Length: 162
Image 1: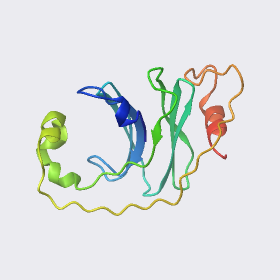
Image 2: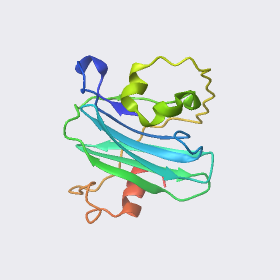
Image 3: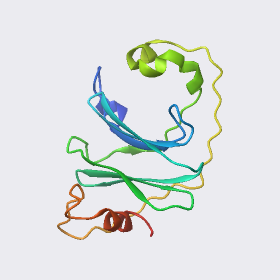
């Protein structure tokens, strides 16, 4: 997850962040890719067949890219976002959810979900093998947002160790 530090945001509809995560939603094996700008989120869910998955969230200038690779599989581009609204410095970290089943009907009503205190039984077991920060290897003049400027395989090569 990458987000604008909370001290720089105030009031409703000011959240600005991006993330890629796995193991959430209505299916146990999917990748969740989300961008939130001024409190409005855009979500994309991608089914996967493995429990383990490698995730990448990369920022180069105003471009942010998410990548994912199911265990033993190939890399996929999750999304390419233009986020000129983000400040130079962001907070980076791991996002985790717990007790999704307690949400019940609130799963489809985000306003109600954010206004109600749940009395479920939250539990969490999170396994993270590593977090790695890399310097992207992007050729000068490349527009990360344009698949015509850099195709998915070249983008993946530039943003991973592969």
